[in-house]
Length: 286
Image 1 (tube, rainbow, N blue to C red):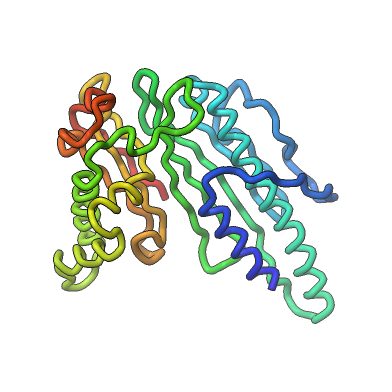
Image 2: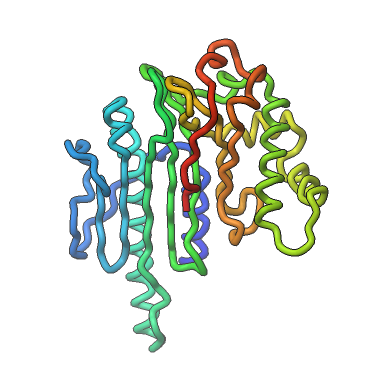
């Protein structure tokens, strides 16, 4: 039952958009390699920014130094956001480890518990002027068949608290959604096995994402910006799909890029001049 309850809580962590208020976990005698208290960002934001490892759990936060260089308060907010989730997993791991040990002792069986782990990684994908784009990659393992991870995009304008919404960037949501579906179809076709046709994949994508308007406004809202071959510009918008979003876990995540050239005529006036050139793509997160 403990494992089932944990799965539900971890699913909540994967889907949540912001950190909840959490109570500090009870103190334990478990040896720790670092303090779990939220502390100011280190002056050197190397990798990792924060790490704590015990027999029960391994937790980590990594904040790209480029984010702190852009806005230290923003970097601190990411650090604090991650800490709340890490504390929740830490408390659950200690509790489950104790429960599993007690059950094993009572039943004369091996403990079902395996070390839990969670990592939050915040990577700057592109930055120009007063805009920075951040990819949040949250990895979690709680003893199941395999770990899981979730991708979230956050585009931040200096001086603004809330991330930039896709509606502020894209005016023609249906046109944007149509290009998104087309590129996702291409990528899924490349990963397909057997004699699957493009028409079959396109129908699957249509069923998953809905019409082009829905694809653009809902699925296309989880995005990051890509650097460009043209100085001072963004080269495209990449939409993030975590494992299970549009396929089985074995397919992995999808990062689908709509190049600046295909966004022409689809952007709002405030953003049209921010795009140009071709996207300089990064390796997909794993």
